[in-house]
Length: 185
Image (cartoon, rainbow, N blue to C red):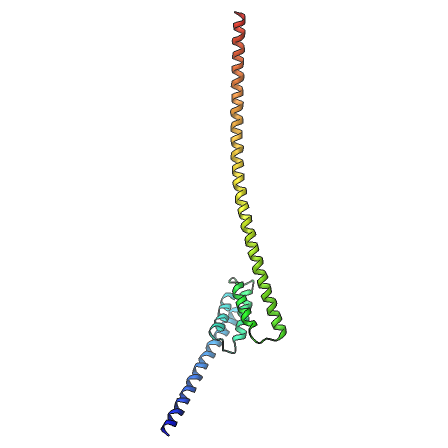
């Protein structure tokens, strides 16, 4: 009888603790949802995405998990979010795709995922082309500087050549004058 009483007390205590833990989890989830919703309303998308991701990361067993995953994915993909992150959006869309979804919703998520992959590839290509353009710009500036230097050097040499031609002309005149003087003598 005593053993049965102890078992019953332990069961009641365990049920009470489980209810308390569930209640605490529900309160935490509700808090994060309220915060995320109000932040999203205020267009504080970075912080809203963080709260939705916190729900999804910390409370995957909660009933709010599907909503949190979807909202985190959408907010990380949102172009108005200054913390936009295609990798995180892709992570959350992939997690959302693992949930039981209706066919139209699943197709929409698959389109989002393919668009994110396409955007990632385009960004990588743009980065490569930007690097090439930057290196071509550097090479062009170097060549421009070299051409400017060569042009100054050519002008200097042309000036020196004109000066040498002028001096040569003077020497020629002097030589002609000396030759005339020798012929006259």
